[in-house]
Length: 260
Image 1 (cartoon, rainbow, N blue to C red):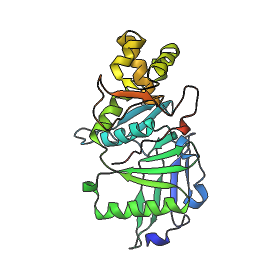
Image 2 (cartoon, rainbow, N blue to C red):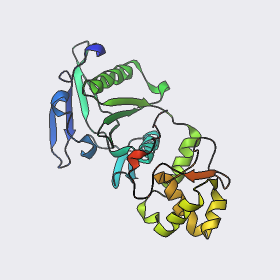
Image 3 (cartoon, rainbow, N blue to C red):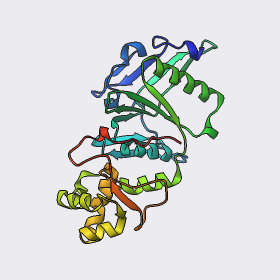
């Protein structure tokens, strides 16, 4: 198939609905399905000697678990969860198939389907450059063309920046709403209105043991902001007010792009 001529009717899509029913049809017919709500198209394997790590990540965005098939997928899932423009996501959302140049059927299951606050969609494949063979390159190219044909974005991502990822992993430990304390959050917003050091600002609010978890939760939610690529979070990291306000919509914030 010439990827320049891929149409939505050339590609068959198969998925498992939220009710557990397997559905099949052309991408052109099924593209409007809310794939951020579907079940994984395939199971996550687990066996002795397995060289990749599968698991389930609790997403603050979804309020539930989303599966992954490697730690690299988990990291990108975490970055998507951290992105305030993302409102929903599903792993292994569907299987695409199409006729290859030799007439044989080619198949590919993307890693994630992402829904944004503005209603647009993003399909994500996670694979480092060094692990892309000729067949993989074709599958990614056809998948990207198929996505374009229905107005979806497509991204093939690799290894994220190490410093950014380390900081996001740390903040993810405070992503659950149970960490939030409104009275402490309000005071933190006042203290960091003009920006100051992380620990100095926390101590102005109260005991650091009680205050820091709320501070990290607000950093996760973008109510507070810090440069996560400049260096590892420390007592001296400069924290300021973010673009997301308490009670406001995350869609007003700038996104962290989950890219390698």
